[in-house]
Image (cartoon, rainbow over all chains, first blue to last red; front, side):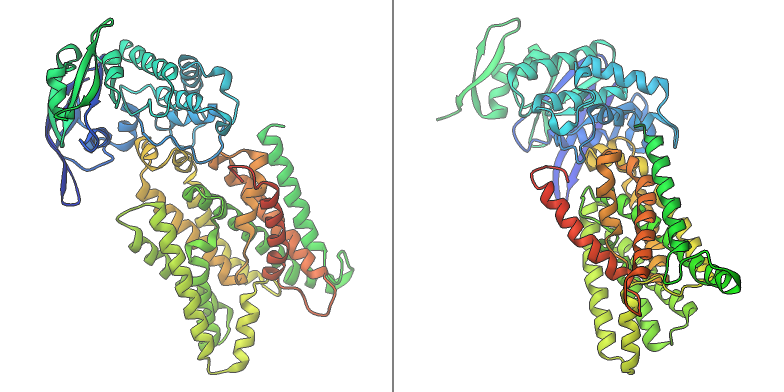
Length: 256
Length: 318
C-alpha cells in the first residue's frame, strides 16, 4: 500500500514545522527526502510513524497511522531513527531480534518465523558473522548494518530511515543504499532522509524536497535532481557530473 | 552453561540461603522441644519469608528501573517511593504510636502518595528523564519532611525508635507482618514483570521503542505502580534496606547478559539470596544486639560496589 500524506501539518510548540504536505509515496520504490537543515525532513518521518501528533491524515492504503493499534502500526512501519545509540551491550543478534517485538504475541518465545526473519535480516546485511559479538565491539559501519537488520527483521511494509548514512564511509554508505534498494525491489516501500544529494541520486526513484516545512518539489529523481530545481532550495550553485544518471553536486554558495 | 541451568543454580542458592536463614542465629537450629518450635515458627520463619520476598522484589525493581531508565546507577531509591514510605512510617511512629498495623498503613499511604505525585508530574511527557528528575526531587522532599518531623517530635524517646526503624531490619517480624506485606509485593512484582519486553525495546531509545509498539505511558504506569507496591510494602515492614536493587543486577549482568528482560528473574533470585545471607550474617555478628540489616547491606554493598567500579572503570558498560 502507498504511504499517503493529505494536508499534513505538524507544530512544535507554537512553531509550524510542516505545513500543507500532500504526497503519495509509492510502495516498491525508494523515496529520498532531502532539504536544508530544519526543513522538516525528520519531522515528516516521525509523523508517519505517529511519533509526533500531526493534523491532516497520514495513511497506509486506507488505514490512518495515527489510529492504528500500536502493534499493528509497528508491524507495518519499520523506523530507523537517526540516533544509533544502543543502551545496553546486547549481542548483535539480540539487537536484530528486537525488530520482531511487534510481531510476537505477549509472553510467547520467539517462533521459528521470528528466528528465520532474524537470520534473513542478518544475511541480507552481511552481518551473520557478527551476530554473536557484543554491539559495543562493532565498528560504526558494522553497527549501522546491524541496526538496519533490526528494522528488516520486522518485515515492514514500509521502511522509514532517518539519515542512515550519517558517519559512514563511502563504501558502507553504498552497502546500506544497495540494501535499501533491494528492500524496495522486494516490494516494500522505502523512504529515506538523506543529506547527500549525490547519494539521493544514486538510490532514489522519487525525490521529495522540503524547504521551510513545505514541499518544494516532488517527483521522479531525474526530474527533481537538477540544478534548476535544487539551487533555490539549498541556495547553493550546483554542477552536474555525468554518471549512470547525471549527479548534482554543490559547488558554491549562490550570490557570493 | 545455558540460561535455564544458570537459573536452576541460582534457585538452589536461594534455597540454601533460605535454609541458612531458618537455621542461623545465636541459637543454631535444630534444637529440641517447644522452644525450638517457637523460635522456628514465630521468629525465624517470618524473618526468612520476609527476607526472601523483600530481597526478590528489591532485586527485581532494581533491574526494572535500570532497564527503564537505561542507567546502571538506578535503584528503587531514585523513584522516591522508599523515602516517601519512610516518611509515612516515621509520622506514624512519632504521632500515632508504633503499632505495626498503623505503621504499615501509614507507610503504604506515603508510598501511594509518592506514586500519585510521580504520575502527575510525569504524566504528559512519559519520558524517563522527567521520571528520574521527579523521583529524585520527591526523594529529597520526603527526606527533608522526615527530618523536619523528627526535629519537631514531641517525645525524644520516640526519636530513638524512629532511627532504629529507619536503619531497616527483619528482626522480630511476625507472620502477620509477612501476611500484610506479601500480597502488595506479589501484585507489584507481577506488574514489574509485565515490563520485560518494553524494556528490551527501550534499549534502542524512546523513538525506536515507540515505533516498535511500546506505549511509554503504560510502561511508566507499570514501573511506578510496581515499584510503589513492592518497595512501599517492603519499607512498611522492614524499614529502608538499600543497595540490593543497585548491586544485584550489576552482579548478574555479566552472567545473564545485558538484555533487560533476561535480568528480571535472575535479579529477583539474586536479591533474595543476597538479603537472606546478609540477614543471617547480621544475626551471627558478635555483640548482644544485632547489626541492622540496612546498615549491613550498606557496609557490604558500598565497598563491593566501589571495587566493581574500579575493576570496570575502563569499560563503556559497567
